[in-house]
Length: 482
Picture 1 (cartoon, one colour):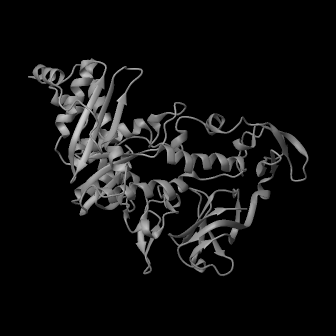
Picture 2 (tube, one colour):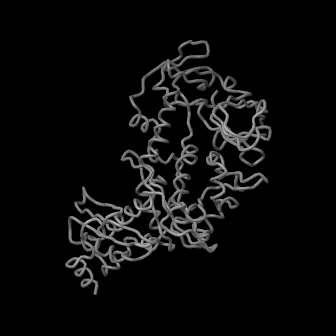
Picture 3 (cartoon, helix red, strand yellow):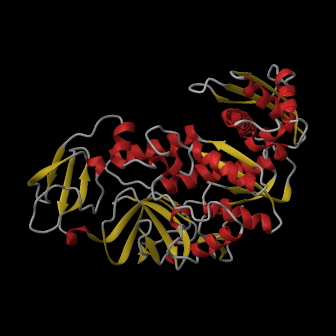
């Protein structure tokens, strides 16, 4: 039977032909394997209205593309998003080990066409459903459990993975947003019966996040790209997709909570302080918070892993990446050498009086408070106090010289009046410190704010994010100016 099915798709391929008018196109393959598959999908009334393919290379690629057409033609868009390489192989009656890559190519082409279909335009493709939930899945245990909890609560769950970065100089297997992560997350979503979509945001991510990251380092600042990405790229694009899908809600695997103080929704810290990610989400505004959910906010990491084990998820024990997603498997120095406008220039290391103590390897490689790697002999440990990019100098001094009792912020965004702010987190994973906002600061945008700290803080870095808190609730965020 298997041989007959494969032969039928090979000798009488289904849907081979030109791209239908109004269709979205996805391709997969090419060098080095030599096989290339193109699938084109057109939608109407929430279903696959027309689908065609073209393929080059071995006969298995042609048969797999034809099988893909047979699997999705006339079906709902969400059913099409459930089709994976294993389904293509079953449609063909099985494939030998040497031909299985053809099923993967056909499935990849299908999902790239669906990616383009859902990303192009703004009109809803599916009717709105109060039960439908879009869940962000990275391929890790946290997002997988968030999807499971949403599904088990009776939701009509659709999974989405963001493709943000593709770089041969990094290790895509360690990243949450690489092509490898997309494939892993798709297989995971399909294994628990969920349709899976991809958002290809590589161009926007490079422009809005990575370029800004590089420019800030050129200015001698220490940016936090994750806060910027969450605030201006990830959630904006996922909520736009949710609208196209007719989904009422977006769910992610972040460790955070949402509370209502009587005025509206506010972000709040997670129950597990070791995993709390409220700092990374601080730039989300009320309109976003009204449409999102964080089902892990009340759980600890061990509890999440236990849920994953009980569900038989292969990622239950998967280790977490500690790198920025676009630096996975590489160092900051190597990354900036490849992507910055020019090579690092050697410069002077001086003390607070301007006395030259040594030479540095390029100011972009250092951050405020750094001790290791200075290469300067001294009777006491030295720390980076300041970076002067215009003069390509590092200013170093003692630990006590790093202490500050006030911080200038700007720009800043307050969700509530500044008089309510009583704590601030000045770095991710740092302990909050008591503070007060100087002067009258109503809710809204501010070009600058000043914070008085309840106790001295060491190593405050320009460009980092200040997460402004009232107890465990996020009342605003700002960029540290000085």
